Amino acid sequence: MSTLIYWFCNDLRLADNPAFTQACLKADSLLPVFIHDSKEQETVYGFERLGLHRKAFLRASLDDLKAQLRAQGSDLLEFSGQPSEVLLQLLKDSAADAIYCEQIEAPEEIEQVRMLQEQGADVNEFWQSSMLDPLTLPFELAKMPDVFTAFRREVERAQLKFAQPINAPKKIPSLPAILSQASMLPTTAQSVSHPYLLGGASHAQAHLKQYLERRLPDSYKETRNQLIGMDYSSKFSAWLALGCISARDIAAQLSDYENRYGANDGTYWLWFELLWRDYFRFIHFKYGQKLYRASGLTGVPVKPSYAPSFEQWCTGNTGTDLVDAGMRELHQSGYLSNRMRQIVASYWIYDMQGDWRAGAAWFESQLIDYDVYSNQGNWLYIAGRGTDPRGGRPFNVAKQTQDHDPREIYRKLWLSS
Ligand SMILES: Cc1cc2nc3c(=O)[nH]c(=O)nc-3n(C[C@H](O)[C@H](O)[C@H](O)COP(=O)(O)OP(=O)(O)OC[C@H]3O[C@@H](n4cnc5c(N)ncnc54)[C@H](O)[C@@H]3O)c2cc1C
Picture 1: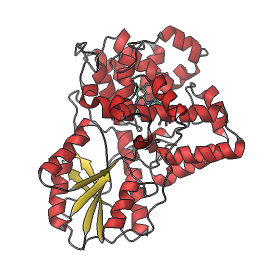
Picture 2 (picture 1 turned 135 degrees about the horizontal axis):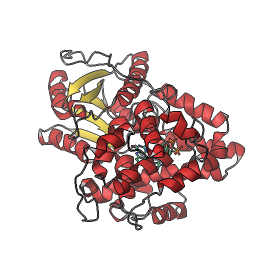
Picture 3 (picture 1 turned 135 degrees about the vertical axis):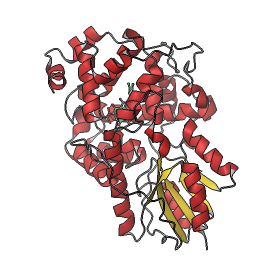
Picture 4 (picture 1 turned 30 degrees about the vertical axis):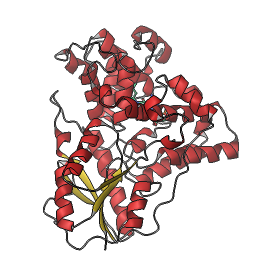
């Protein structure tokens, strides 16, 4: 009899989840768990790593997953603590043979797995969060091109679009009999939901369906730099971040859409942006921990300056209207357009001479779509400490205001609320 633990992380779905499917195939009994990391409660900057909007989206996503597992006679058990410690205890309590989970190639997650393995745990990780399968790339990840355009050209030359998604497992093994309920979490948590972005795989699929049915990909290229509303960009990011839907599933449905209505600039541009997401993932295999140094890949030190101007930036009280509107939108809704993310990040780094790591930490706390690879990658990119050969992306706020909010509609919307 084999008992396995399935450790859900940023893959809160049953469909196209190869790691979970493998666990289901291998186990006679399976214990699906989610662990609320106790480290999520603190940052060196004095705010929570998991802000209210993120908590709400996570809660809804876990409830959705739990309901799907229960519908198949299983369940999701939630625990709180240091993940490797909780898992080691669970291995003991349930007499499980091994842990299955998705692979996350970021320092803290790598460390958790290392600690588990050091204690003799058998951990089976599966890479599954990218649109492309890294094994099909025409280069080794350790030698991937540093510059995005070179990376994209090689991917296009090899005619890679996406790896085929797989179905949800047909049967989920039953729960093991012996379970310690002592450290299980109650399912209520204080949180604020985004009015439209609701967590969970069911909402992710419903959102994608309506996005495609309303033919919004066709206008994506023209609208993607706008600032107000649900439709100017896809809003896939929050569901992707927690894995409520996979990038492969989105790409496959986008490909069906192209077969039906024809490919166009909009559908290409959406794929192109999903490729940026892959790029920031894959670059972690090449540079790893180096991406988390203050100097990034450059060796240029950072002056750690964040107070008191940091508070002005976070709360949207810098005195620069466009930046303040953006920072208030972020805090009030947990979301910000890509254009505004670039503008406020650049303002913090170049105009306020702030430490990019503090800015990245605030985004981590606030963004419902917080994703370790994309957040780190984009902040490094703007700060000129990543792989961008241009060495930094300062944005001229006056020009951005003129280009993107000439009639003051966006500023009025967020500054008056
Ligand atoms: C400073 C900064 C921090 C960021 N932090 C995050 C983060 O924590 N999580 C996150 O998902 N995105 C992050 N982004 C990237 C981007 O802003 C968001 O992915 C996008 O705005 C999400 O909205 P959308 O789903 O409507 O995107 P769309 O414009 O509809 O794009 C479709 C998808 O492509 C991917 N994508 C688009 N742009 C990027 C990009 N620049 N980098 C990586 N992937 C991209 C996303 O998965 C997105 O859902 C950050 C950008 C900046 C400038």
